[in-house]
Amino acid sequence: MAHVLDHIFTTLLLVSLASLAVLSAGHALINKRDPRSALGWILTCLAIPFFGPLFYWGMGVNRIYSRAKRWHREAGPAPVLPQPAADLPPTRLPGELSYLRELRNLSERVVSTRLLPGNHLVPLENGEEAYPAMLAAIDAAHSSVHLSTYIFDGDETGKRFIRALTRAANRGVEVRIIVDSLGEKYSVPTAWELLKGSKVEFKRFLPLRPGGYLNLRNHRKIMVVDGMTGFTGGMNIGSRHMVSGPPPVVKDLHFQVTGPVVADLQRTFLEDWHFAKGKQLTDARYFPEVSEAGTALVRAVSDGPDKDFRKLNWIILGALSCARRTVTIVTPYFIPDRPLISALITAALRGVEITLVLPEVNNLPYVQWASNSYLWELLQQGVRIYAQPAPFVHSKFMVVDRSWSLIGSANLDPRSLRLNFEFNLEVYDLNFAAQLEDRCQATLALSREITLAEVDARPLPVKLRDAAAKLFSPYL
Figure 1 (tube, rainbow, N blue to C red):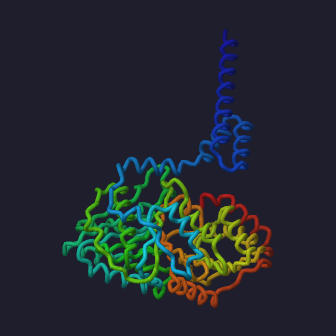
Figure 2: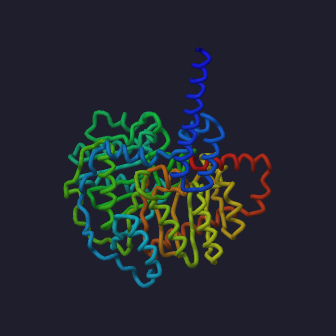
Figure 3: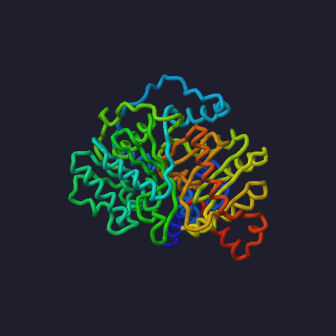
């Protein structure tokens, strides 16, 4: 009898393991878009009993999108905010930019926001330029200050902002702050602790929970004052961005924005406020009539893992395909996927002069190791790559033909383009593009060009280290 039971148990176990392997392999076959990835996981599930399927369900299934959508559902219906008329024709491009109409059409199809005329953008370099402008705007606020940031340090610079925000709240201004719950942990004391007892409303974005420590972070940097003046870019709040201060320091670029597109900065903040468990704020007073302030055509691009497709990724690829003469990319973190590498190489082979500017020394060494392993492929096809000298440069922007620019919070890595909530602006304006291009040219005069011979001459242990880091590129 015991022998029969053992036989039945063994049979059931084998059937269960076989069923799990087949089920897992079938799931990979149907859901994996890359055939190489699908084949690898199918073989793993079928060849390694129990552990193969376990690895697949633990590491091979992308739950980022479904998790983000679920958390959005838990937050309740999205607020219905004032929107511009949806039936208006696409904004016309001036004659000198008309060749970019295909890029404009692409953006129209993947982004719900409109390309708006009449905007003005002012680059603000480092905390020395950005923070005084932001603090002055807070001190001049009459009705509302809305601030969203990834990191809000509790150092001297953070305390200056705390004092300004508290003063504004005390005089009756509605002050609301969103800080990412992971970014909040970068300093002690935290901004929330410093704001205790004040009239400032404070919300954490996605409080830390199992499975949410590194992914689905709100990496956006947005400040909107009275619905009239906006600030956005790549700069967090902290003394590290004061390059005249003691090390370690981080150089960065932020932007002051005026004109109709400020309303889209406001919408993004209010949607995030609702998602962060705040109440719905749909009052039209948050969207005052904004006069034209300049000549720039600007579109807000709000992207995140809850979206049905990767807006920023498609826009970047579209911009590369439209480039005729030059492409300049400045980014602190460069971990490209295969489509981006192909787009860069294709543009270079068409004769487009592509310049990629990276930091000489990265604040995340393992990211730099992975990045190094991609450079030789680009250098082989004529892409010019430069290393900016220390201190670490966190600036990020892209310029095409001194005509079109992309600025904001997103880096060229999987974390920004797939895992985080980001906010960028695409700008059609010759003057603004020239400003960014000129800044980059000044940087190149101080930078070191990386050559193919230098990359090939890396010692074998360094090549192995970089290649090993590259294996983890999707998670860096």
